Image (cartoon, rainbow, N blue to C red; front, side, top):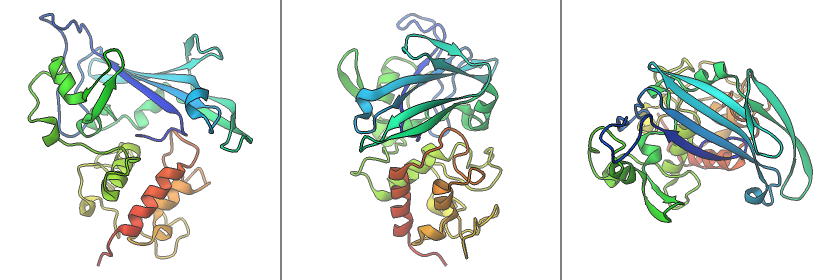
Length: 297
C-alpha cells in the first residue's frame, strides 16, 4: 500500500525456531491496532523491484534492493542490501547510497531517476511507535491472499491462525476484525480508501508519540474528527497558502497536507524518506476526498 516511487514490493517474515507442527516454536502476539509483537530473532523482509518501462511495469521490473529488520533483545535493527545488475546477488550496504537509472515513461521517452538506499540509522526514523513494525498489523493484513505454492486463496489472519502463528486465538472472525481496503480498490468508499492511503503512507510518523512530533494522527483507527487535521491551522508553516489549514474541507489547494504531497521543495516534501516522485494516483485520491469533506465550523 505504501508508495515507493512505483516500485513493486515483496514482503516476508520469518520466526525463530518455527517448526510447525512441532511442539516448540516462537509465535506472534496479535493486536487489533499497532504492529503485531514479534519474538526476538525474528526477521522482516521487503524486496523492491523498480519498473524500467512504465508502459510495461510488470515485465520490466528490476530487483534493486532488499531491506531487513532483525529483532534482537527487544529492539529492531535495519539493514539494506543492493542487488547487482544481474539480480543474482545482493551486498550489504555500510551506509546510505544513491543509484541512477534510466526509465522509459508511458510514451517511451526516457528520464533519469535516482533510487536512494537508506542507511541502517535511517530505519528508526519511521520504524518507531507501534512495536516498530509498519505494515504487519491487523487492518493491513486482514484480506485475502493467493498463496502461490498451493494455489489457495484465503484470508491471511485465518491462515496464520490455522498455522498457529499467534500465541492466542484471534478475538473474532476476520470479518469482525479491523480491515482497511487497498486505496486503489474503487469498490470501497472514498473515505475508506483515502484514510487507508494516509494510514499506510503517513501514520508511522504522524500519530501520537510519533517521530513527527506533532499531534496530527493519521492512523486508520482514528475518526476524522480526532485526526487533529480537518479545519486545523498548521503549526509548522502554511507553505505560502493564504488561510491555510492542514486539511481544508472542499479546498485541496488550501490544504497543507495536499501541498506537501506535490511540492518540489525537498524541505517540505512528505514523506521525507522512501520516495522522491509524486504519487499521481495517491494525490488524485486525497484531492477527491478533501473535495468530498463537509465544511467544519
